[in-house]
Image (cartoon, rainbow, N blue to C red; front, side, top):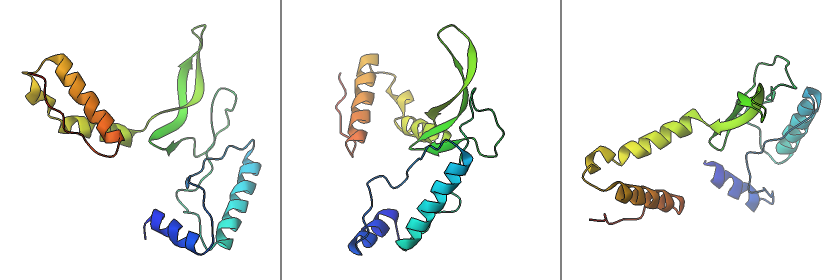
Length: 153
C-alpha cells in the first residue's frame, strides 16, 4: 500500500496526520533526541503504525561548535543533503558549517531531464530561443505537466 493510501486509510479510522509525513526534529542533546524518538515511536504504535527502522535515525549536526564523533553526520531531506561543509565567513576565514546542498540523486535526475531535451540537436536555434524554451519547460514541470512551446524562428 502506498504511503498516501495508508494515511487516507488511517484517517478513515479516526487517526489525524499533518501534511508533513517526514518530520525533521532538532534536539539539543543525544539524550533528548533518544527520548523524543522513543515518544514518537510509542505514539505511532498507539495509532497502529511503526517507524521505518532504516529511515528513522538520529543524525549529529557536526560543525565548528559541535566536533564530537558520531556514526551518522548527514541526511537527505526533500532533495537536499545536509552535512558538514566548508564555508567562508565575511572575513575570508574558512570553517566547517552544517549546511544543505542539492543531493546526488536530485542532481542525477536534473542531468537526465536536461539530457532528455537533446539540446545538441537544437544548435540551429538562437540562444535566447533555447533559454525561453528551457524556462517554459521548467515552469510547466512545476505546474504538474510540461507545456508545449513553439520555437521562435
